[in-house]
Length: 346
Ligand SMILES: O=C[C@H](O)[C@H](O)COP(=O)(O)O
Ligand SMILES: C=C(OP(=O)(O)O)C(=O)O
Image 1 (cartoon, rainbow, N blue to C red):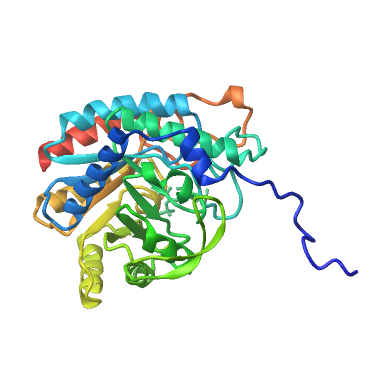
Image 2 (cartoon, helix red, strand yellow):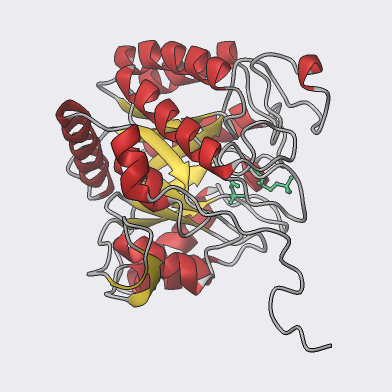
């Protein structure tokens, strides 16, 4: 009757400190200058200095690092081919926000078996990011747990705050201290104001509770992240990639005195989570941009080696190589075709 703490806590395992993990899996001076350069290119795209389209493309989630690197090598080739028109950044998503429950990503459960070996997940994530950077590709991720950035954010070129966390003060505060450009999605119910308010909050200085690189609980003060933008991803009310939706979003941003770069996600609720519908959505986004709407600075595609997705959990030896275990993805051939066609259209 008198137990008042830890009634529902079954274990509490210390993690390596961020500093220890960075020492174990270090970045080189070349990696650091590549990251700084890729972030600056993205900033230049956001503020209109660089007229290329920013394309965030890759698997819904990384669950098999071998297939992930196979994908990265293919993407690096096409990225090089279209680099005059499109700045290709690979989706390297390790943390999945779930509507209810489900596999929460490589960091949270790297063995895909519910063992939730987070230290190993953090190690695999860092190593994987370095391998992707070695292919010459910049990296994109969704940052979900507010402690994760300390372990991996030095290797991230651009990040997203997802539809389920755009309204969260914790995530807005975290974003205010991140060193890379960052997009806030509209909410799952289609609320644009939440994303606009998130940008306002994240561009301001904030003080909040965090963890230092030595793993010590700290009061963190930030100066605000000036490189925030909105991402339209559709909602349970339908898609929002049409010209009217984009105009509405631009007006809302302008009315709030915010810059108006917009990224449009061709996946998620903009395609009804259907890989079959994603290509047409992407083509329409590119069409609007090519027709002169320069507020559309970026697009997002969920793409992997194989089309669609597969049920999970499932016996690991039955998983199809290169096929998503979270949302549906377009396959490699379709990805390559869409990127080439869009570079020609732009
Ligand atoms: O992009 C991924 C999913 O849409 C998101 O993580 C939610 O997934 P869920 O609705 O299957 O839980
Ligand atoms: C979860 C994602 O998107 P959203 O927040 O739009 O659902 C994602 O991009 O993986």
